[in-house]
Image (cartoon, rainbow, N blue to C red; front, top):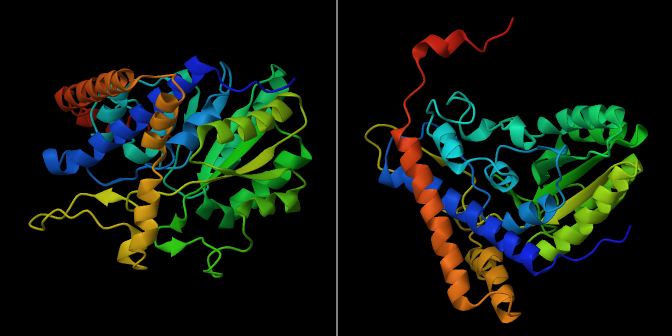
Length: 342
């Protein structure tokens, strides 16, 4: 079966989801200043990776499953999770996806095929293999998408899982979103200590599966590459490793400041650690969200007014999500032991 390129409606859907991810995460980030103390702990944003997320998940269909890293807001949002329930979860409220008990790094929405995340680097990769094994047993052509960062490729779980997935020809697509930085360690070729082999897709060779590197800022390129991997998986020919190269536009994470300490958003690691201001500014100029909007307008698929209207609708949706989350109650302390298992 040959993969068809997305039509105009699908391309507008891509822009809509990219805008929703970006706007949702901007509202998460703004919470630290607009509502100090509402978010407890870390949040990690995926701004810069929206095209990668949406391009890959454009192939998701009912029965498929997704597991992801802790930089996770974009996946359930694209799959159909309610942004109000997502925001409430990040705020630690009872109306959250996980009743406020998981927070930003542990979103889960099984009803929409999102099997969850973990704050542990690479922890979701073997879980994806388990879900893919179950899909293989069911024989319904279902596929599992496993998203993780470039740092996870240094974990034993990554290699162990790719090995067994290849041996058993599991229907799983491994999407490594290489955002250029492992917290403050660059993954570029000029820093030989960061990665054994560039591009990182070469790691697929050790496990006898295809490895492909794609421009993760181009949703059409990601759609094409992941589409081939999904077709291969659905046909029973096994897994693929896709390295999607993006650039994280925010610092590694945001965190609430201790009492009495002024709130401070750290500068991006490119500037704060390496002094690479030109690199960071170039990445901002290549921001995939406004760039994709420009492509659709230039190609006549959207008018400037239509694009503005779409952006306004998304802004309204995310403002409602914030209002819902702020109005949601905190979990009752009686539930503290409810979800613990011996």
